[in-house]
Length: 475
Image 1 (cartoon, rainbow, N blue to C red):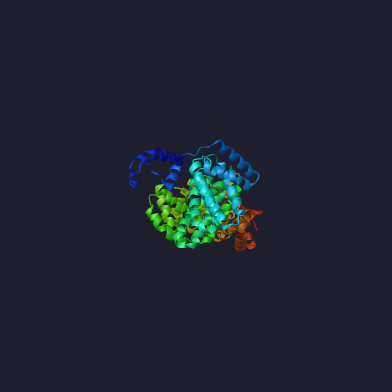
Image 2: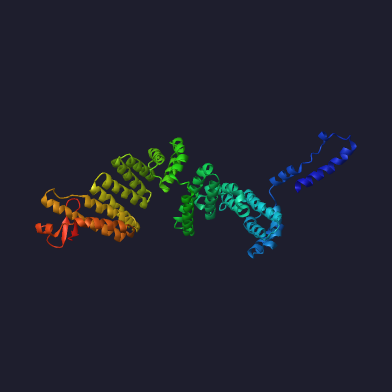
């Protein structure tokens, strides 16, 4: 408005002089009349003036919105939006409600199209005037813009919506709006289905970004929306699981070169290793390569566990256990105790099944039980008791002679005690425990064998010697 006024004044001053002179050529005109586009650009550069009328109109439309009288709110809102868009943040928070209500009520396609475009334009203008707001910065507003694309344009603007949602999630992190994170995965998945080869890596990255942020929100005890975040994380995890993008061979195709190109990039290596662990692709050579390279740069529990799996795959179980010892220590520092319990159990399995080191197997299994007990978790303890029972059943603590042959059968009493304990604390292993109980109870010392050693089997209990060192009931 000011520019146009200045132009008129300038013309008024110039006209008398021009009348007394020869008519100049167009190129020699003393007064340059700005084009409409140029005038508009100059006008936009000036900070809009917040007048008393603006303040009044803000109050008017805000009161109407509070009473859900959106049609009444539109006129004062539009006046403020077009003349003083920097007056108040409510121009945009209330404006979104006004435009949404009018869009839903509109029947004319042209009007609906105008309102849809206005909904997007509004977010751009909000970024211009309030993008530095500490609570709702540009990244937050981009999330609102992405949601607006979906609300007003549906599937026709998926790429634009995804770009805004991704930028918002990347900028806001764990402070992201939950719906922004969920819709990012939804939209990215839809784009991935349209182009599985071209958008697989993008979909995986978007899922990782959203899933990590939701996990942080869900595990934050001070977050009032933690429960909602947890449920939405389950939802996006399910989307990822059914997508097909989590296929290990497909991940290898995407990340094999990325690992080799980032052998000195710790952050990238750790992200790749965590992704493989999350989708249970820990037998992949790409996963091993990422873990090994990351471990050399900076050991973490994930890299140590990955190296343990790699060593086991190569048959070097001693080295695998050494890596698990590192993983246990590092996970304890991070207070990741459920991971600690898993690493302890894995070490117990290698000691029992591969190295035949039964006392060590029991040590790791008991440590895992203690860790889970401290967390108040029963599930997972059962498998540890089964490992201990199997280690007892495989042991021969007594001499290999006639007497020892009978005494060595007492290990089955101790073993069955552990199988019974396993199903008591962890019903999920009941079927397995019952199978072992049925199998090993057949090998108890017979009455005749116990009669031949009356000094050993007096009373109702028996102390199983050697490394086992436990008292059990005579059966």
